[in-house]
Image 1 (cartoon, one colour):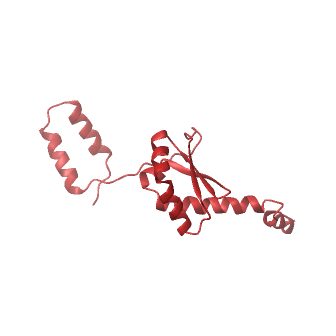
Image 2: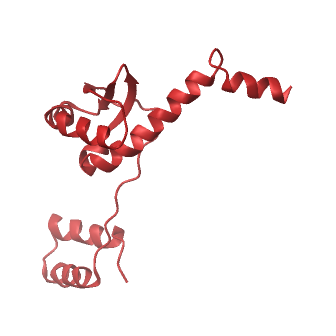
Image 3: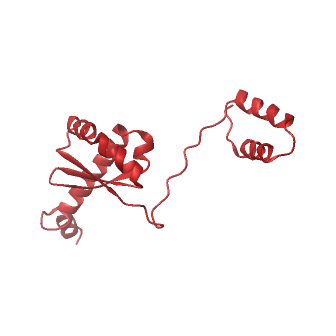
Length: 144
């Protein structure tokens, strides 16, 4: 039985093509995350590769527009890294509620910034600004 399953998973008429394509997409997604600017790769994802065209789903129109402007550069960078790609197609495809959310990028406050904000907060009268600063300081990660 294990031999038949292994054969099915590797056979070109079985799941082999699907697994091979999935592996290729995972590789492209990793390369895309390396070459695209972080703010754009975080708001988009590789969706498919079909006939040499990499399909990217962007979370919104602004991200899609910027990626379309960068398409020639992204295609060239993918080609340099061994991906047979001649075009990039960008579609706006908002993520569904079922998509796994990415954790927010946390940038810790330096010790000095934390001290400076605390000092500023103490000098402010009771106000929405002071309340916002207090909330920021309570939630912020600190560098040691």
